[in-house]
Image (cartoon, rainbow, N blue to C red; front, top):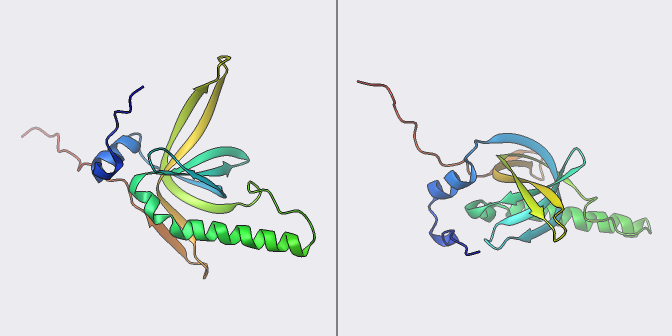
Length: 158
């Protein structure tokens, strides 16, 4: 199937956000793990959990550029967990056991996958617009951008 999406570098903010956040934005608290990868579009995907349920957390488009502090914090948690395990002479924890709390504003989407045996698997994804995390001093910092939307139209008749 051909990919008809615009090239990432030429998508204006309004067009990007209108495609991503069509259904509005909600605020959600969850935990993210250090497990991450890049999508074919260059977005960053992180494994997350809400009440023990695994979700995919996506930092789309231009928001990916603001993930540096989060990635640094996750890498720091991995080093700390490995150091503690080594000192206690036990195996290093699984990457899914290392979790960092995050509050985010974004939108939900569900992906449906079918395997060759026609078995359906649903994946829950949360596309992030903005996220809040605590810095080293415990101060909550906000990253990302609120979705860009068109100004409300005045529909009153003159």
